[in-house]
Length: 274
Image: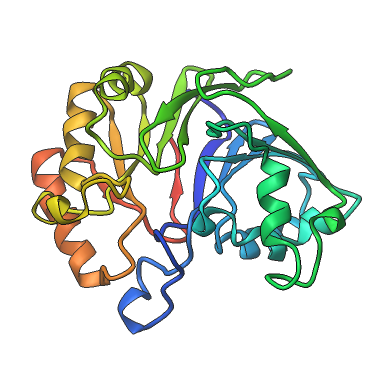
């Protein structure tokens, strides 16, 4: 059994933050995860949910950690300008991205959103952050027992999925991703094979999908199908459509559990252990 291996959801919504009465139970913040493996901390994505994570980290330990981006669309990076540890020289944050297909670098993207007239504070003020780029498919270098593998996903502009293996347990994060690319569809079941927990892009339903084909997102039915094919123990439906209400997510969760018992719907604040 893996000791101190967990994933906490700080933001589970897709596309844009969605405050309001209809999203209170599942939450309206966009993508952000906190993964713990022994003494190691890894943050995945820096959507609007990262602001609250940053406030908590400033009141606790873990002054050195990695920040992995699945990609750099706005809903996954909009929290960085408001992420308090990034400005604190007492922290050491190594930020990684591996989805670029045109030679762009992570610091290039961050510098675009953190520059006038878009934002008054420049990226150079992120004193704690060291920006690095890799190629999806590479394993990330570690000096501890946590193994981080990566895979290319199908999303406009590219995206990267992650697999975290620690003491015989595994957690996978597969978002933002659209099924339909034969090469990637063949690689994914192998990548997530036997995972204890799999976060998966379930923005749409199969009935909705044809209207949004090419947008770079999948369905809850495909999440369940992949989980069954790859013998994933707990699929977690994630990247909720901004128009999706709490009641609608309840219905999706119930339908998914009938097909694959153990399926859960990602909820802001949810704490998952393999």
